[in-house]
Image (cartoon, rainbow, N blue to C red; front, side):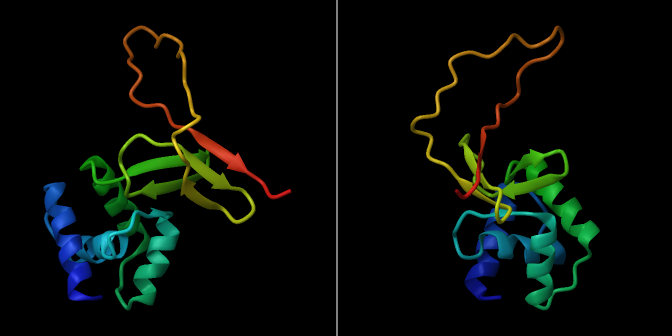
Length: 138
């Protein structure tokens, strides 16, 4: 990992007030080290860590991604009941899910219009609305 990637990772962890443990720093550097936003699965990030030569268990990757989400550094995007992606871009924005290759990408916000939502049940409030547009090649 480059010194710049490690520094970006360290700064990112500081934004979330997270202690830069070895595992967190490794994963943060993989996620934001080049300054680009990422959509990753836990398995994909685990593979990237392994390829970079860092030993991090899959359970640690899952726990660390959850900690990043809890700290407001990432958001989880659930595509279906069994597949979650983790996005380093945390503002509200829609996504394209490419069914053919299982890839998630940002979709433009223009053209997406939500005019009304149902009232939340008693004792609840709407926390967030996720828009995932599924794509299939024709």
